[in-house]
Length: 107
Image (cartoon, rainbow, N blue to C red; front, top):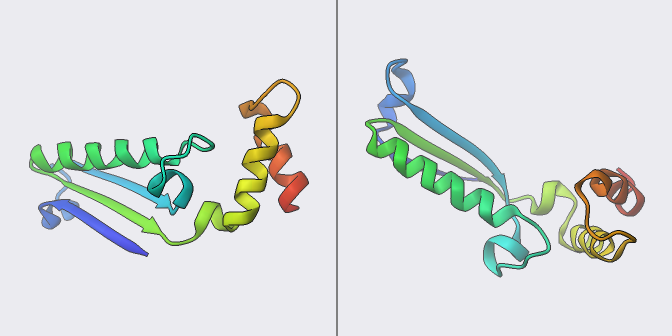
């Protein structure tokens, strides 16, 4: 796990100062390679932006980056799920996400 801090760390103990936090699971495909199969990278970019803006407002931004690829599914399983979702009847739909994950990953 990597924790990135932006701004003034003592702000986290001051109830009058803003704090922005984001836990984020590693996603090699999106975070590193920019694939459009998943949406992890935009969430990470938004979190960094929010952390910096909070730091600039006299607060602290915290991002915890967990090294467990794709909600601990593993990279291969995650991409099997994403590819199956993409090619299913009706296309990739959020309402079928968990069913497809369960079908492939068994969870």
